[in-house]
Amino acid sequence: MRCLSLVSVFVSGVLTLAASHACAQALGSKPVRIISPYAAGGTNDVIARIVGQKLAEVTGRAFIVENPATGEVLAQHGAWARVPIASITIRVCPELPPTTEQRIADHRAQTFADSVMYREALAAAAEARGWSVHWYNRESVFRDAAAVLGCEDVDAFLHAMGRSIGPPWQATHKLAAAAALAATAHPAPRPTAG
Image (cartoon, rainbow, N blue to C red; front, top):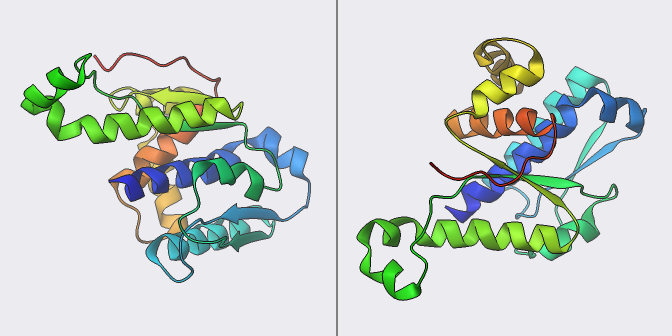
């Protein structure tokens, strides 16, 4: 679960970079560094290299994948980046009961409490570093992404992106891409899960 969340954050960041025309102009022809904080040769590293290769083909700019020491904490992400990290995108968390005792007693809360607390800790660490946090709602993120692109439906765009990147291009990747696109509109306050 945590690996998937970090992959979503990673893919979201890469796709935000690729989707932002203004950012592409600001970077000029400089190579873009993709930080893959996982072991070289692992699934996440392979995905990072595939994404980097496809982005290089599409943009004509060099994308370099770096693998710092495995297992580094979020606080070190900022130190790895050659360009300061400005924001991250995280899926909205379901509401948890207010106390630990209530969380333990509530079976529904038990099933997702660790995921909620992880996302909240990730957001708090990002905010402590001065990064903005864009919270997206899974139910509206595809509409929000379509609005950023100026169309009614983002499916064709995501399908073309998936064909361009190649396998694996799964539902979680589409969700991360949509969240990255939606985040380019403007930083959003944390909405409620409802």
